[in-house]
Length: 345
Ligand code: ZN
Image (cartoon, rainbow, N blue to C red; front, side, top):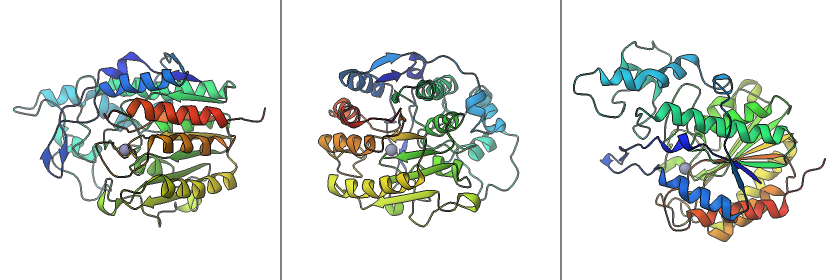
């Protein structure tokens, strides 16, 4: 399988992170890339650099005022006396229907959902390359590859059309899905990350052409708290085109695979022309977030199960944090997937 990655994705190196209000080192570190590259290579992937696709595929998902915010906010932030080194919001609108303020502090609160997505001088560039990595993989599938892996970092699935959050700036999975829509009438996104794909759900919530399905730790006591419940089913034309499968904390392989079977049935009934897998590896039992208890062999079974859909597939990296098995979990998923994946010509 071809894999895509660009060196510029290493430059974003966030420092700050608040966990239950306490300052901690940010876990979305560049070292993740080395582990994931090793995992993809061990699964037989050849790594290619994507080309720059310009802002077009990003602007197909994200609003112009949000893109401009990400381009300029770091430089603007430096002009504030006594401001933090990284851009971090400290005030948010309680309802987003109000005015968008002109000030840097006001716009940080408007465009950033939480404190876990600090913006440095390198963030915008790294995020563009992460998005182009997803587009490169989507383009390979459009050109006839049965599958491709996008080593996206920073990740994307918590980013809405105009809001960053949870380590995410541009929604790489949504950008890949929208790119696939150029040739595919119906695209499904299956999110197996530990956390609910709230940004992806938000982007496609009123659309029937992109089905969004997410398996994740129950948000009742877990990030992203405000989204990810089973009664969120889409709105308007999109009603019935969003499926959330929240799982009890610490659930293991059997519970995960049972929910995955329900997800696969829904995707099968939608009959997509292409699939995006938002592949988080943080559902692993040994991941620092500790939300679910999937094993390394469980990831191989998850890959095999998804492969049986037989749909051209773009695999987009989402979460999965430093632990001994991070490389091995990616290898297990990709190997399991590749062993069973066949698409009809
Ligand atoms: Zn996650």
